[in-house]
Length: 107
Ligand code: FES
Image (tube, rainbow, N blue to C red; front, side):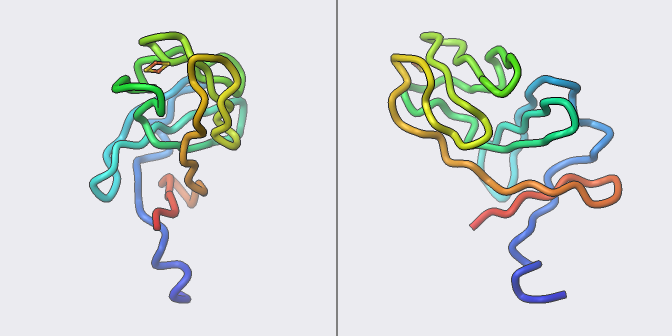
């Protein structure tokens, strides 16, 4: 294992991933939203950049998450805001599925 590998943190069981939906998890003291779109898995901060809303309570359509509070939207692939009032990007985290576990790179 290289030192680079130690940056990866176990987040949840692959079996617990929702299908084409979002789930909130606590990883290394952070509130993270994990999304699935087809076979792809993405992760961002779970708190909307516009206010204090949890994106895991929002609505995922394709690669776009709609905030439950003011309906701002973000592209979960790169965190960029796609609909006002959201105007600041979400932090994204690299994801990999290894065996039956989902790992995130935090740091
Ligand atoms: Fe998310 Fe306002 S809190 S759009």
